[in-house]
Length: 122
Image (cartoon, rainbow, N blue to C red; front, side, top):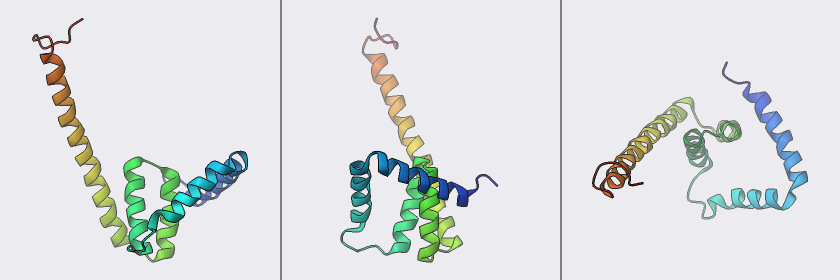
């Protein structure tokens, strides 16, 4: 087992309550943002939770994974649907690395060209 997700979710809620007590306005703002995220109602709960889990994977947020895996189960997401969403997240992360590799190559090229010698000028 990688992590005891049931305990992690419980402890995350406990820590969240402490944060809410220490900074209620910030937490209220976060909760309002979360509540408004499906403002037009175009997506059903299952789709929203699958998107949330894919984003949680790409942002490496364990708390998000715990919360949204729980909500996905409640929304009726199947293991096959989750596996497809995870495949998308993995492909997107690889795509992001590919995209940033291109940016790095371009930066290296441009920075080398600024002094004409392939290395930055001092």
